[in-house]
Image (cartoon, rainbow, N blue to C red; front, side, top):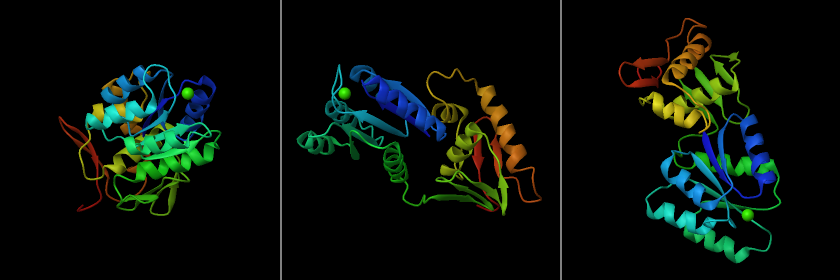
Length: 226
Ligand code: CA
């Protein structure tokens, strides 16, 4: 899952980035409201963590402009203590949730996960395709009952595929949701990582292969007869 963080306090922004990367998210950080708005409206993010008071354009205006452009990426707004009025304005403008500074990273993570679950309510904590399961909280991946060890990037790729089970996803979609903006990723890299995943997921038991190549389009993950 790819997250945009727009926050002008470098220390906070960088610690959010570091924390989220440890949790297998791809993260882009911008310290300025105008740049943040540009990225939020041109790149495909799964969620945005948006500070309220920003140089350039403030968080409420960014939210309003995005919603006007029909961009409904979930937004978690960060506010300073005492900005109750602003918080209300923020939610009214179309933000999905807010968090008051100072906050614990664990709370940020919990709220972010809740937002990421929201669009598709069917997605609970455990994603399942055939006998493959992925626990989005403990990061445990299993085929039947056998635990499969994945690298952070392999996990992120698998989670993205599983959140779109039975749908074809293109290499471009994969690149823009699994890697951040700074990562210079070529379509070949996606093939390489799909290969790693297949070795770990599909070539471990006699069960059906779940990751399918859709020639000329991309990939999809499906169970038998799904
Ligand atoms: Ca600020």
